[in-house]
Length: 110
Image 1 (cartoon, helix red, strand yellow):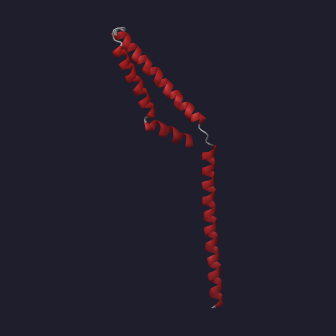
Image 2 (tube, rainbow, N blue to C red):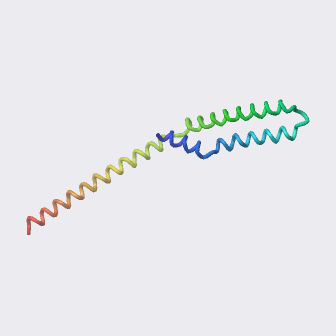
Image 3 (tube, rainbow, N blue to C red):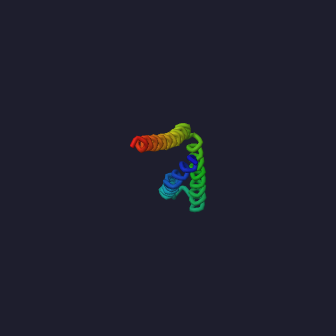
């Protein structure tokens, strides 16, 4: 669940798309500046190939980031929050029971 939210946030942030777009436009600029050295078909083939390769690299970076994220701290914080919520509810129940006992004692004394 935590990994799914993290990967969804990474994909929704658009950082990988920005990375691929930057590679695409930089390769286009490179080939435009060096147009005298390449034919138009070579330019198109290289631009498409470079973009596909860097899209694959971006996906590998995403998978490596997800696999290298340490989830122990997140798991511990979720477990701590769950336990603290449970303890809070138990304390509230105890307070309600004590109040009921006190009201019963005062009702019997009157």
